[in-house]
Length: 87
Image (cartoon, rainbow, N blue to C red; front, side, top):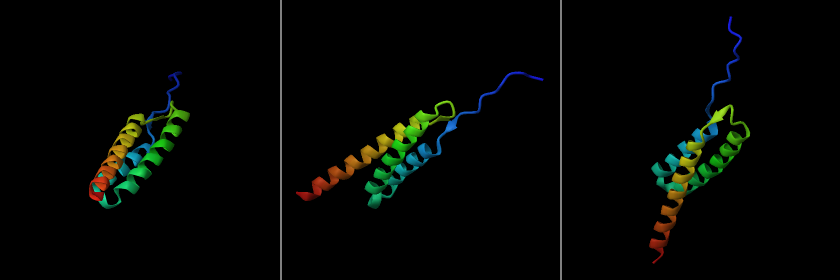
């Protein structure tokens, strides 16, 4: 019988995964890309807070950073295309 206590296995936070899925959906579904990218940023921010609140249980900061980066890129591209269509 082993007396060692095993720590619970760390796993990605579900909200971090959702943020990444929303960011990719913002690329794929261009008509509502701005809304999906905005939602991805909000979910990524919430996931970041949850991961930092319990770092021994959750990982997924790279998913959060990836989702935020993709979302910002989608928002900037939408802004650039919108500005080009004004003139």
